[in-house]
Image 1 (spheres, helix red, strand yellow):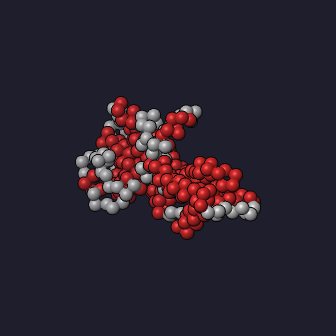
Image 2 (tube, rainbow, N blue to C red):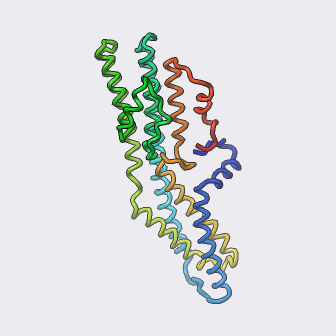
Image 3 (cartoon, rainbow, N blue to C red):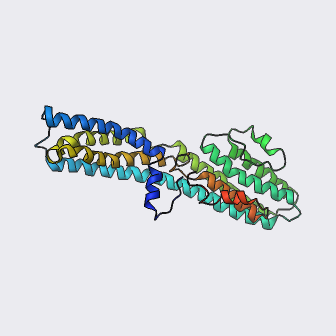
Length: 309
């Protein structure tokens, strides 16, 4: 995700136009440019194809309809993006709450148990991030006592495997009498949030915008841009090319940005910074449970550590 100062417009514009989103926009605009050059030259020098008697209200009406569709499309995509961010915000808050609870619950003499929960709760966010990105990278996970990672290799769904191991250790502490009945209920309610967050993220990922709706918007943009040069060339002449290019840049850009943010868990520049959020969760848990991490890990969790993540 691009991290920038909101008052630094030039840096923001630079980063946007140096990413894959901008390249995708420019690729499509190159076809529009070629079309406009051909149409303009043909209309001005070879054949009169202008829509002279077309009312200006016709193009304005099409523009209004297209604008309404793009607004709905962009809002729908951003709702998915923001819901994903809310889910990860819930994960951050739940980790802090649970770490605070476990820090007060587990005696300082139970160092192995404290280390286990600190590492395994941190592992959940990294496992969920990789799961949402269709990756099974175990190198970011920490082994609590030498056997967790080998067991996780048998799970297709790593977040479920990590939560299963946490539940087993929690039950062991309850059997030993270190956890009371009321504390067990509290732990269960907090641990259930982890799988709820996982389910929300999986629902967002597995439910794309319907193809027919997305296709219809693309078709409408194509028709609008295709008709526009025939209606404005009388007034604009050769300026039709830059004028229609400017309109196309906005329309095509909004559609492509909507496509990018509707899947917020990827690795594009405008997706959620899941790497940074996972590092921040790990840092928060270890600090709360008094298991301090090296400075490099702390720096990696800061928002300004990376410009693009």
